[in-house]
Image 1 (tube, rainbow, N blue to C red):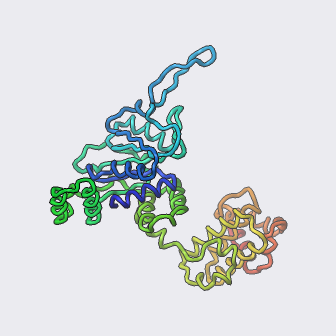
Image 2: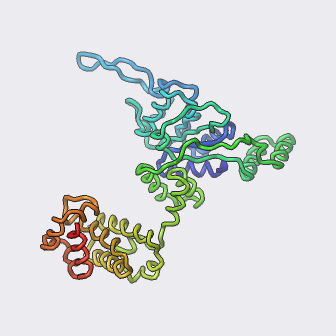
Length: 377
């Protein structure tokens, strides 16, 4: 990422309320860029150089307080930590910090609390790390790095261009022009030629997928390539590519609210993977809204279409998911399908009070397939 792109990523992560970790060679102005974002937004900025502090500089020192007839130990948070307003709490050089400092930072990153201290809602956490190449760093466990979106500031022609603009604004003289001319001859003249990389694999987790949802919620405010890079920093490059390719023109809401006729032209273009994805998302949406009769009919029409296109497995999974709240007490489609007693409940009509049941029995093929799938276990 270039400095401008890093700024946009910081803003995106701020809107999505996601902790951010910026990687790059030392001396690339990572710290200055984070500070510039705060200045441009007119918000506060607090910089902790983690390689130069102790855990007590974050947690505070212990003191005694009277409690009833005795005393207890409490920690007094440092004055530097914010108490109100908005801003960026910047934990710089965090992979050069001692382990106790990293553990203290872990708590404030994960819980936004540290002992008796709570970070105000308007404050964003941003960290920065230097590549291990040619630099003394400490290892960080997966539990820690798995709490962040990771982005890299890298050298490129665009990086040189933005740096040249910055340096001319700061040093408008002949010497600056000479340096810029030299940088223009070879990109690697501006910083280390060593190939730096993040020394761990970015792997997905339910926590990071929830962060990805928050990114997608505010994505329309930012350029697509910035959103893409932030998604890569959360769940990894390959999975982001797969996710972006999986997005289908028809949404689950379209199917439930508008029905098949309005969406058929696009649905016939769906890949098998996209169909499976729609099955789970349609079921989730239908259960959340407590579907009306019309919406139930639309979902069952979708199931019938799946049967007609030889996707009976998808149809069964979908009907099991929407019947789950009706049958009650059982979680997960696979568990429902493995319980023969549920087949008897369905066959005996004990779910007749449900719109799902009354509409399902009108569809003989779908109804019989559902019973057969339940009874086969």
